[in-house]
Length: 470
Image (cartoon, rainbow, N blue to C red):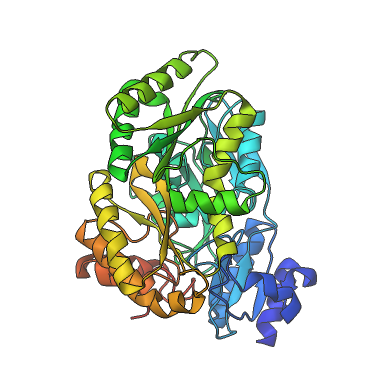
């Protein structure tokens, strides 16, 4: 492989081809710590041309490539396998915001731009890029596109694929497809942009994107609401949609177990309500400067919910600081789970009408498999997405690890029975590739394999991710 390494150094410079164990360490383990591999090298190009040169070199040598953004994924899709033969292609140096067009409502960026920087550039131009994730300070746009990331604004603005107008992609043989066209209307063939969104680096390397921008929403009305059940939360959602309409931007849910972890481990976290509840909803309305009726609309929603028995109490944010404190309760959940020890993370989506029945049945079933297991449930009721995570019984991490396969199978079977999906917004990665294929029809898997074969016939782009080996 010496010849390949020399070609890679010629393409990007000696300093950006990493081979020592010390230099590779941060790139070969995912955020969860569950997936750890080895790499032949980590290559850090600074431009699309350099990416193309790297991909062409690896293609010529028959060496597999693992594209990587901020390495914040949760399913092992951005780290190499254990063979030590794959090249990790890090887009972290590609951080140029190429153009902001506030009139057209677009922003053109390199794939390595951090999500928070896209948000900031949009805001500086008087526009809004609405995607918001807990990892927005470190995840990159390329990774968001590759996994079709979701977040807390999907209810109003949609998944990442709804925000992408055009892409620039380096294909597996090193050719570059320039699809950076910010057109809302273009009926000239297959929508290639959507082929690559959600493909998890298995069809090519996204190097640039044109994304949609929206009018800013500086006004907010935010409440933390105690609800007795998931069914009540769904009923509250209907009320919010009825009374708030297009201003409803966020509708998040969390169970008491999740909030207790935040209160115990997140510095400064305070329960805004005097009495505990089994479930909570974070609801937020957002509007422009001229939308001055948001507070009244939210109060109408909450009043109707209490009257109909769908809510028992609520705390309404009266200042930006109070709003931030309410959001911290929701956004802190994923991080504080680590403090409690072993965690089995699940990311499922279900028909909204089935959320309550599914959740009510799932808890007892998991207790049969592992008594004492602690469901830490939170997510986005407005789009049917639950992060149905499991913490180990207190003091018994080994028990969770031993039962992980049985617990996951029980969850996946129940999701499939409800016509849901075992991955709502995290992707499949290495963790769920085989499971997803087993729940899909033979026709669907054949179609996915046909796309892969057409674009990557050598199978060198992120092998083992998204689709299991034949």
